[in-house]
Length: 354
Ligand SMILES: *Cc1c(COP(=O)(O)O)cnc(C)c1O
Image (cartoon, rainbow, N blue to C red; front, side):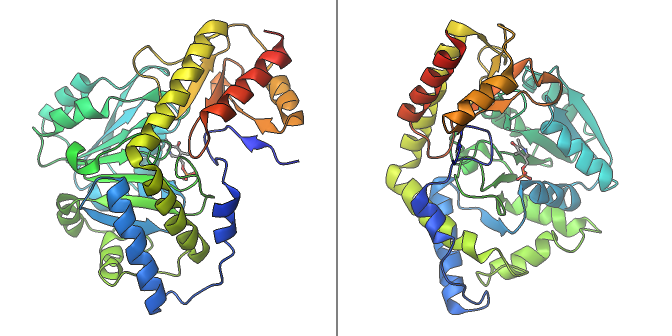
């Protein structure tokens, strides 16, 4: 039996979207491919409220994080850490021999904007690595607030990992003024894994031109050369291109604001439920729109709960790393509906005898 995915990636993919993955292959240097590429780019610009350059990468989201560190860190980066996924920025910067300092906050807390402001004011940094939605703790960082502060730093290239939020939570990319924002397809876009989406500003492009050793697979200059022809540098994951084009039409039919409101309604429902029976793990006011990290205040056996849910054809996520039994995470992202969330929570209540 298939277990419906209420985990923060990969997320549940609808049958009609899955079917698009078995579209017959076309040549990636053909005119048909260029049309498909153009169609995806045009739709993504609407979904992300941007006129900036769209990048389509055959990699998971982490690949585009590597692109950011290789292409945009010239001098020294400021990295921000509030959980396991935001920590990945620092790991990638280290692995690529890049200089950086980190601001680190306790798990469950957000990254304070004033601390970023103070650090950037020293003039030591030419790039900022930030995480929109920390998937390990269910924290949504205050990106809109940071956007105001970043206006003071026109020489800093601001990179945002929005992997577990883009396509569900609302990011008006040009309004925010981010220089590089990335996501994977297997989270709020509700497609299988294997492809990543990025948006890059002209400022970031100018920076990359000055940075040596950009590598090969993720050299932004190579991407741009092929972007201009509505192609990808290497053979892309063509089945995903068909499915993404189809899924973006569905997203635009729903309307991105409506999609965001559906996510918010699911989030609010789960938060209320969590507060009734358990508690929320993230600090108040910074809860994610796409997943809820529930504090396991009753000390329930999360693995056992998930096993029982499995018998009912559903699965949720345990806590991440050290939080394995201290929290459990319910993802409400992608194409899931409020009714499906209600059914899940009802099952949990029955299983736990709440
Ligand atoms: C899932 C996730 C990643 C990793 O994405 P991949 O597509 O597996 O590389 C990175 N950052 C965040 C915030 C995530 O949720």
